[in-house]
Image (cartoon, rainbow, N blue to C red):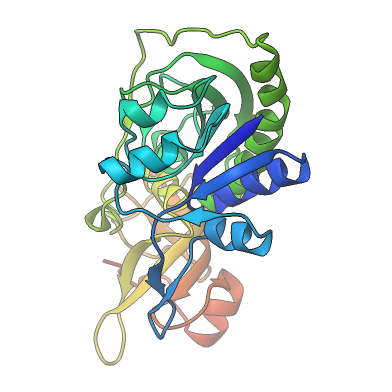
Length: 308
């Protein structure tokens, strides 16, 4: 098939790498425009964009796919199908209908649960025991199209969004690789999504990242893991020159009691509204991530310390 690939972050890069390895004919790669990154804030291409350049593929980075010139350019590609993986834009009907066989999305949840922008993070934060990846036919509605293929993954008690993302990205790339030949042959089965059980994975907002130790420990633990590594759930630690912001990147639930935010031992066990969490990996502002033991060797946090 002659394909267009529309994707932006690392999740998309891994899928694109698999399609390239499969020998797919990729007429054009679409990605979000280069954005400022790093200390110098220089414009850098997205992960998918950079990979496409490495392989000599044509890349377009429109601010919007809704302009008449962009729609005409897309329609002129003479596509059999379009593959969309975390592109970051809502596509108009003129784009979705342009390929001969249609447009297909690789999505990181078991639809109709967690339609939208942040399905991996929201699944962990909600305490879902499983999630998955699916290939669906795209429609104008948000992640509402019929599903062609699925792969289920278990969410473990120590899974972070980063770790789960990596497993899902690999599983999704494999699923896409198996499904595209079925689409080409006309043998893929399309199953409409259930009308019940629809949830939406809203974009993660910065104000969500601060830890509220008054919440139950199970909820705090899921928040820490669901927001790791980015943006990172955070708290403040008392310091000689005022409060120090620290990100919690990995934690585990434990049964223990104490005042919310109180450190209960010398190894970062923190009381919550009910139960406690053991902080296993943290990152002090301006420094790199550290396992709890290494962090404590540089900054003791004795029992009785109050976190906020």
